[in-house]
Length: 423
Ligand SMILES: Cc1cc2nc3c(=O)[nH]c(=O)nc-3n(C[C@H](O)[C@H](O)[C@H](O)COP(=O)(O)OP(=O)(O)OC[C@H]3O[C@@H](n4cnc5c(N)ncnc54)[C@H](O)[C@@H]3O)c2cc1C
Image (tube, rainbow, N blue to C red; front, top):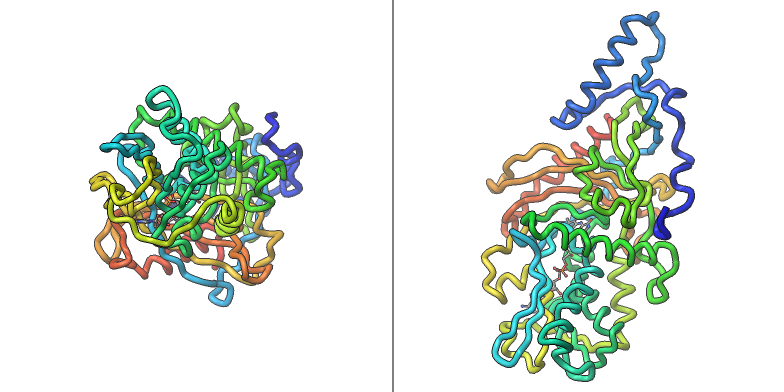
């Protein structure tokens, strides 16, 4: 066990032996559940054929423990704000590189797609390292002015990294500071929804592992600058591969377990669980970052049209989708996401995360969409203590505010209900 993992999670109070519980597989038939469920169903049929009527059908595998999870309340009365937001995805890999343009050095840090939170602290460290390693040492002395363009999670963690290293004249310049994609993001730490070329994957994994260490230290109360904003909760997926977390296992995480998730309503699912998953309460963490940086950097609300207009010799380009325009980067794509906040829940029942993928399709605006269901215990500051939970999610390639694809909210909520087996 690493220092970053909780000591007792494997003995979760929700976990009971598979032998003790009758289990039946039911619900939505995606290709993956059909295959996973198919094996279990075939075994169960054999048992059922030999057993007297009314005998509970037991799973054939004794290796899977049963986890009991309570579905959230998903009736209309328990639904809060509907949120549309846009992932800054870069085909091939995020741009984390340094270039010199005239007398100015531009350090790019944008295009992290659906994994900006998962990577941000590690990406900031990676890019500042690149700058400090360029031309045999620091490009500017730590007292010279530096501009960070963008105040999302990438810009704020870049500013944080600079301050940590002793840069004393940092300005964060951004067109907008509030209600960003970074505040809206669901909060799962997992490197998913990116489009990385295979040759970059090892670097991205290392950046994610560094970020995991950071968020784990926040979750365990060991990070002096951040009191809240991350916690360790079990993360459930259909397969290890879909989690993207396998490279983290052994480095910072424990191996996933095969479990049967029992929603207590007759619906069960074969899943894998990482008990040392990390949930980042994104809006809370954005507040914490901002509060920490307020007395240490200068914030300026302003749209940047060109890096050349900035008076500083070193610029960090962390403008998310805005970086696409600033760099004329044809690889940047907006990937729309639909979210619904939950309210009046039982917070103690929401201490887990699920991400499962459904089929691909086309939206009402004729855009390619990958549909999924995910749920996380997100809480927006200034909402009631029981207003906990967010349901997602969609991945609409090329989706923008002009194509809201509103019918996806209903499709998404139905997918969530079907997955939980809620009538
Ligand atoms: C529905 C949804 C769910 C998500 N869930 C997760 C999750 O569970 N886990 C995870 O890791 N990630 C998740 N993400 C992805 C994550 O939210 C993003 O990768 C991340 O927020 C991107 O951060 P950013 O700082 O690059 O961009 P943003 O948050 O968009 O910030 C960009 C900043 O740049 C500024 N800017 C832009 N152009 C200019 C300009 N020309 N001049 C000045 N300023 C400019 C903006 O005003 C803003 O301040 C999710 C995303 C979506 C849409």
